[in-house]
Image (tube, rainbow, N blue to C red; front, side, top):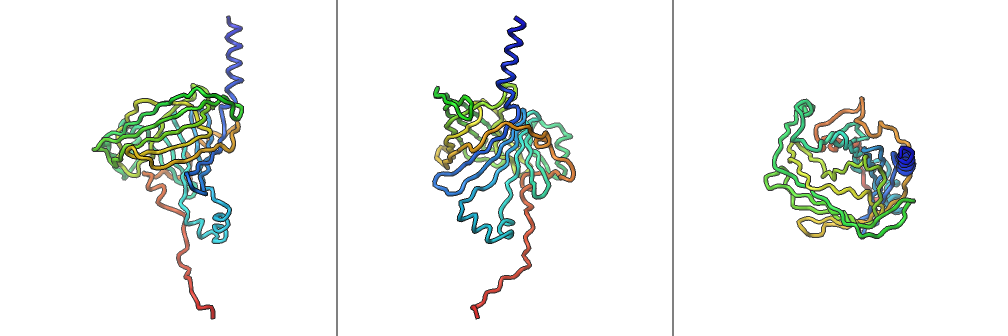
Amino acid sequence: MRQKLTLLLILLLFSTSVFADWKLSQRTKAAGQKTGMISTIYSKGVRMRTEMKVEMDAETEAAMKQMGSMMSGMMPEMPVHVTQCDLKQDIFLSELNKQFYVDYYDWSTLPPEKLARRGNQKITIKGTMTMDSWFVDSGKRQKMFGLDAKWGKLTQTIETSPDACQATQPTTMEMEGWFVVLSLESQSCPTHRPPPATGGCMPKMIYKRLASPGLMLTGTMRSYVNGKLAGTSEIETLDLSKAILDQSLFDVPKAPWIEVESMEGLTKKQRNIDTSAKTVFSDGS
């Protein structure tokens, strides 16, 4: 009996440990658009890091290069997103300004010492935000990147109470496509977090269900606002590989990085642009 258990543990380790650390690159392109978004996801245990950049077509990219650094300075920075599910918090990083913002999963349960770190920002808990998610498995299977993939549809809904700060209309996101499980079940920590709030008013979070079908490698994502279709995007996986990743990629950064009090504060300061130059138009003579 002991030998059977030992053999089973060895098989589990060899079949799943390759996904202890992994790196994924995906393209997301809205319907009818030439350009898309390239996201690179790094995963280590229950922590995940996502870096995003705009993908341009050859014509647009050539025009940007011709305009030089001034145009690149006007492009808004996309913060790096680090999910620390084990600590029940997310971190957003501005590489440009060496600043970071910590967004907690449930502000209503934070101890006073964490709230005190916000300094001048007054935190108010008002209203509720209810999140729900479920997965419907079609039963279809195939191999993708050497993994067992299943076709299904993941649905996520967000509803805020009328008295919530920044109350919004009911939203729904549907992701239909091929899903794979990349990590051990013990490393599964689904949260389906909404976008971080920009100010000091936060709703109390209520989670009904947290479906965890894995990660969608390819498929279609649709968003609905108040029941009406708001957008459709196609997702395609460009690369998936195992990698040994440094723990520092998933931790709160150290000095000289500075913590800011809100998401708004993180994105407010952008690259300095020299506005002292003057453009002179002539008639060509």
